[in-house]
Image 1 (cartoon, rainbow, N blue to C red):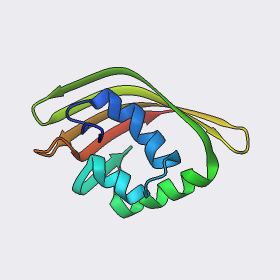
Image 2 (cartoon, rainbow, N blue to C red; image 1 turned 120 degrees about the vertical axis):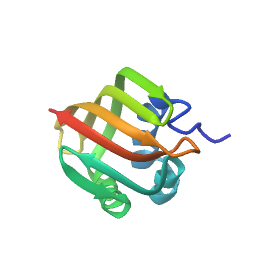
Image 3 (tube, one colour; image 1 turned 90 degrees about the vertical axis):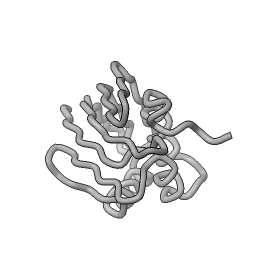
Amino acid sequence: MSAPPPGADLAGYLRRYPLEITFGDDDPAEVFDRYHAPGFVLHNDGLALDREQLLAHVASGRKRATEVRVDVHDVAVTGDVAAARYVLTAAMRKGQVVETEIFMFGRLAPDGRLREITQLTRS
C-alpha cells in the first residue's frame, strides 16, 4: 500500500519523507516523485531549488546523516494550500546534531502532491 500524498496527510508526509528519502531502499528520485509534482520547486530561505538540486542535496545527506527525526507542531491544509511548523533534527556521522525549526507554506497539485514550497528556517 502506498503512502497518502501530502495533501491527504501533511503531518505523515513531514515525518515519513525525510526517512524514506534518506534511509529507504527505494531510489531517491522515485521517493521524491511520489510526493512532489513535476516542476516542483522549493524556495528555502530565499534560495530556489529544483528537483535535480534537491536530489543532489539528498545524496550528500545519505552519506552524512545517521538519524533524522521530525516533530510536527502545526499543520493545516485548505484547498490547494498547505502550511506547517515543525522541527527537523538530524544526527550526523561526525557526532553533531543539527536541529532546524521550519515554517513551511506549500501549494498542492490536484493529485495531492506538492507542486511548490516556500519555507523559512531557524537553527
